[in-house]
Length: 111
Ligand SMILES: Nc1ncnc2c1ncn2[C@@H]1O[C@H](COP(=O)(O)OP(=O)(O)OP(=O)(O)O)[C@@H](O)[C@H]1O
Ligand SMILES: [Mg+2]
Image: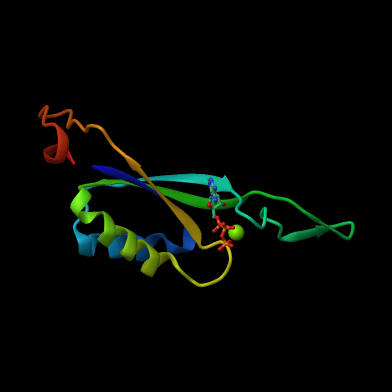
């Protein structure tokens, strides 16, 4: 199992979730976050100087079976990309276990 944390533009949420549905994911956690990438969120000018700022983004966390990982990443790129700076980033990390609280099922059966 892998956890995919995707930081995306808030405006991309609907198309990303629609895209993920086509792969058949079973759950997602969406968190409102603030962040900046390499441009340091510089968007505004203050007394003639560009100032660093944090921009609102959404973080989507999805835990998926290893077999789905490439497909999910492909869908995320397709649905979250505008081609402009700030489209976001995808981080992938290993997950050692998952447990469905209601049934006690573990591992792939629990996701
Ligand atoms: N190295 C990182 N670690 C943690 N979060 C990051 C990292 N890089 C980007 N992020 C998060 O992703 C958001 C979007 O990043 P962004 O798309 O601007 O990355 P970038 O590397 O600057 O690429 P681009 O040049 O396309 O803008 C940031 O606001 C931040 O929340
Ligand atoms: Mg950037």
